[in-house]
Length: 182
Ligand SMILES: CC(C)(COP(=O)(O)OP(=O)(O)OC[C@H]1O[C@@H](n2cnc3c(N)ncnc32)[C@H](O)[C@@H]1OP(=O)(O)O)[C@@H](O)C(=O)NCCC(=O)NCCS
Image (cartoon, rainbow, N blue to C red; front, side):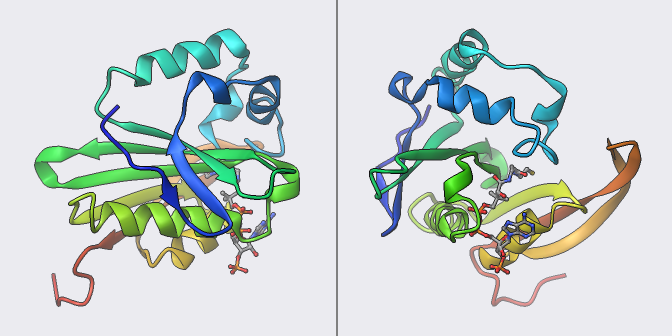
């Protein structure tokens, strides 16, 4: 993984995901139908071995796999953020999961999302960040907007979710969003 400084965001911080974050609680989020309802993780079963293998695969890559840690010690590790870089285009695609039930809907996801986007578009040196989600995932669409992203387009019928075809929503934010562009 590329270098990433611990990012202090007030109620939470972002740190590189390490072996210390691998826990039964974390594996439980990935197997919880409520958490992965709109995520591609819903097609897979996870265990500590598969999560360890994922971390081992991420370590030599140039992408980022981050843990979201709430400052409240009763919450601790609450979820993750992944950043997939497209260096030649100074762009990256970002995804997030807040797995801890007690943390969801409390604004921590928005704080973490806004924090990583702000960092990528400043100290991270990027000009563009993107994200995609299912049109049914209203929490994620709200998060995109809370992070200053603009919805660019929809890809119709991209997913099958609970037996229905669902569109994909694609959003982006640019470092110079104030500048007029095509
Ligand atoms: C999307 C997600 C990260 C949001 O995290 P969170 O900690 O709940 O985020 P916040 O508390 O900051 O809430 C963000 C917005 O979502 C809304 N929201 C939260 N839970 C919601 C729900 N179940 N249904 C609809 N909206 C919801 C909040 O009201 C808020 O909107 P607002 O700012 O307009 O009021 C979290 O729901 C999650 O991890 N979902 C599962 C994984 C996932 O779907 N990831 C995206 C895959 S592409």
